[in-house]
Length: 190
Ligand SMILES: *[C@@H]1O[C@H](CO)[C@@H](O)[C@H](O)[C@H]1NC(C)=O
Ligand SMILES: *[C@@H]1O[C@H](CO)[C@@H](O)[C@H](O)[C@H]1NC(C)=O
Image (cartoon, rainbow, N blue to C red; front, side, top):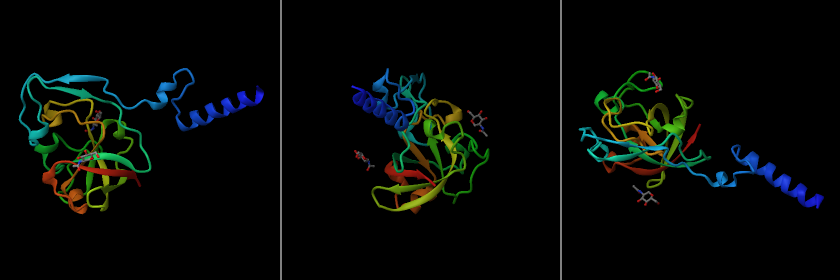
């Protein structure tokens, strides 16, 4: 008996190291993923620079304050953003309170990954699945998953929870065409 109970204790200890939020009482948390905490309803159709993600009257959009867990190489969807253009970003970058130069390799991360500015100015490495190419970029802004459909967010829908929104120079360095709009990538902190 004592041996089994030691094994169980060891198992729980290992689990709690692997998953800091793990508590024996709620084992399902171990498998919990990032779910929306609410939805946002848009009452008007808004014009924006990215037709696919402009808010529409009657549109209902998920809101997230979490993102999928960070791994040594985290899968994500890359979108395109011209951070140098005030009309495209809704305002200066949150980390720098300024607009970057047109040739800078910079990104915005979904709210959960941005983590209240904790990743501000960190360099990340991005690898494109399609081309196999990698590049680096600096985190300068949040891609809000918890807000949208207003001027501050360029009249765009809230970001999904797994977005790396990248400047044209990042797309170019990865040999990808920004006109495709979205590409699968992995990224990691440097
Ligand atoms: C960055 O975002 C935080 C939280 O929304 C806000 O309080 C702060 O004013 C923003 N800073 C800049 C420079 O945009
Ligand atoms: C990204 O990966 C998903 C799942 O593997 C796939 O369905 C989708 O078509 C891919 N998107 C692009 C732009 O390659």
